[in-house]
Image (cartoon, rainbow, N blue to C red):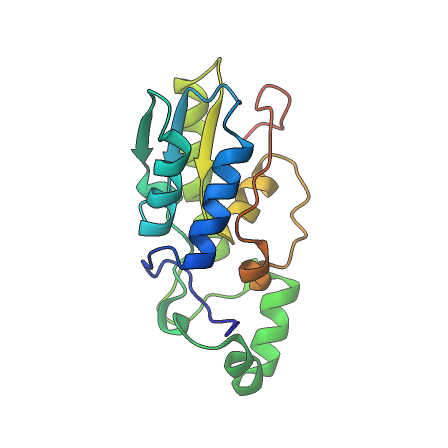
Length: 175
């Protein structure tokens, strides 16, 4: 595993990613999903397609669910950023909202953008079950906005791929 900063680079699912997405789709096959919202990137769209494959439901790509824009850090090895900018890297791990990658997006801006997406989904689906298909660190942003544990290390996104989580929006904190 190279541990590269991916952010909103549009990469298709790898073979391992495809296997993880298929496993998640099998695990959710009996769940009554009414609609799937996904980030606009290829990997999220492919995963959403697997979730919707045997159902008669729509998939909606939401630009506001796109992943964090890491600007000039896209594609860099995490270890290179750590070695070349140790103080910035440490701050980025401890307080991601305090760091804006060069020509990138702040954590705060991404959080506001994703909050708008969640509000839209809540307004349109007061009842029923929706699936959100997103990558890390946007998944961490969503958990944080819904009052879940935001403490996961978003730099370990490669290790968190293929998971899913059930969140009842009726009992989640307000967005």
